[in-house]
Image 1 (cartoon, rainbow, N blue to C red):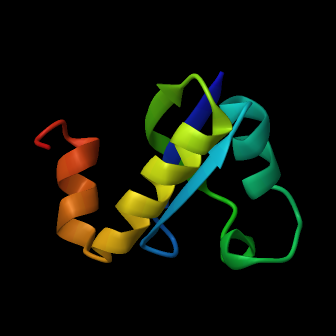
Image 2: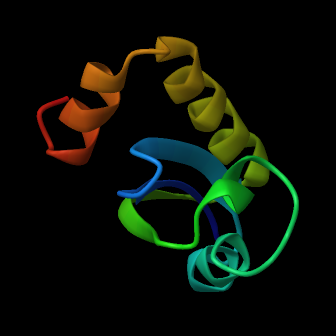
Image 3: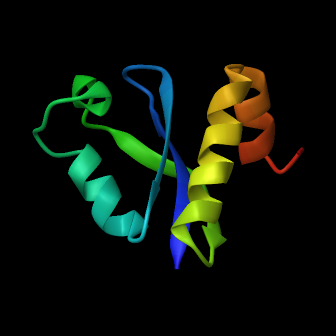
Length: 82
């Protein structure tokens, strides 16, 4: 199984969208010391995820959500309004 996920950092006031085959492990990685976008905070929490049978399906959905570039759409998805 593969997943797209949305995490949120209150201290950075940012969402991050990604895909993985292990959401729990990936969240731990985002909250550990590393380089990259999520390194600016260590309080990332999982807000949303969807499950897919293939990595290709997950990548397609991740790309679609990232193309929205609108916080309100992402928050509506998280709240089940889309």
